[in-house]
Length: 123
Picture 1 (cartoon, helix red, strand yellow):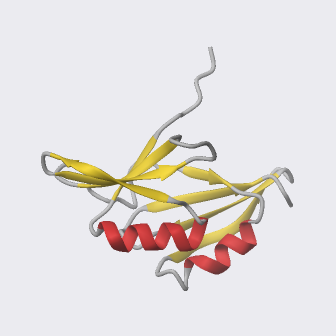
Picture 2: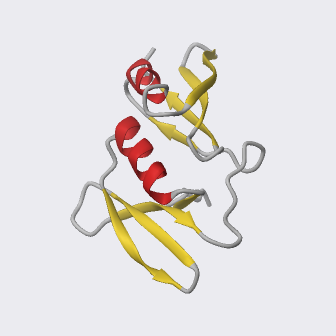
């Protein structure tokens, strides 16, 4: 059985700064979620109404990391996204690298200190 990830949470230190960064880089729409205890979050909208794919989360136990789990986001225009990362406040760590002639990938640091990957099958 093959299982596909269906949800992700990105820990943040400043929810508004992170929302601005991810909107500028990926164009993600977001809906603020009501606080649950000490947690605050912004839900990342999908293509369908009321479809959410993940969240930016601020609260205890959610610490940004450059060394923990490394999520990759698929994209069609890796160079276009790379051009938006610096002006939005992040930085490219390396890339693009090319794997087996079939895809390219990039690692970048977001405004919160998370290492994130991009992968594109379009070479």
